[in-house]
Image (spheres, rainbow, N blue to C red):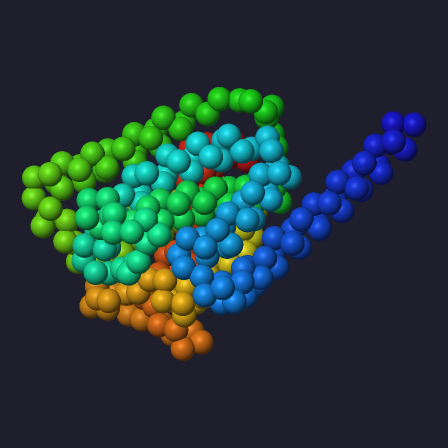
Length: 274
């Protein structure tokens, strides 16, 4: 008797999960179309590509909202501050306009950068939890390793703020995207492959989806001139897709490896590594 009552419930749950997955997989194409139809600015495209699916996955996977949001916040504040300041300062990339007017934190950082990174990390985590993760422990558990993530990210933020106050010209770091990408993106992916091989399959599946989403978002945003890469000399090379040029580092470290690296950090600092 228990099998007769449980099996239909499992079947319905699996059907709902598959329907949700199909919707999320198709959404980047829809978001791109809407972006072109409305000639979207940065914030509207962020909402279309990241906020809409993030809200949907929050609805279907409510129990992971707090954990995903906390992890995303811890990552966003230091990473967006340091990376965007240096990249804007060196003209590696540049956002020509903001819905917040002329305000830029420390003279360079737009608020949209914080919104984008938070939603990107949050969406990566919620996609992983909704479709790929297997729960091994009870809900409501604490995450003691998060304090080490906080320390690991707060320390370079503190150094950045000290250097900014003392002599901001020292933050004009050439080839910063390459250096940051090797140390903070490629290295965690290599660690994942060799130290947590049981997770590689699931995380790389998420990586395939976010490669698709991120590539469509990048091409859409650049076609709409939402941002640009003025100082091409800050990169080791440029790639061209559908006539849209952007740095090799952008393609390799963010579009290809960004979600994989995010989940490597997530599993190590905020999940069960299983």
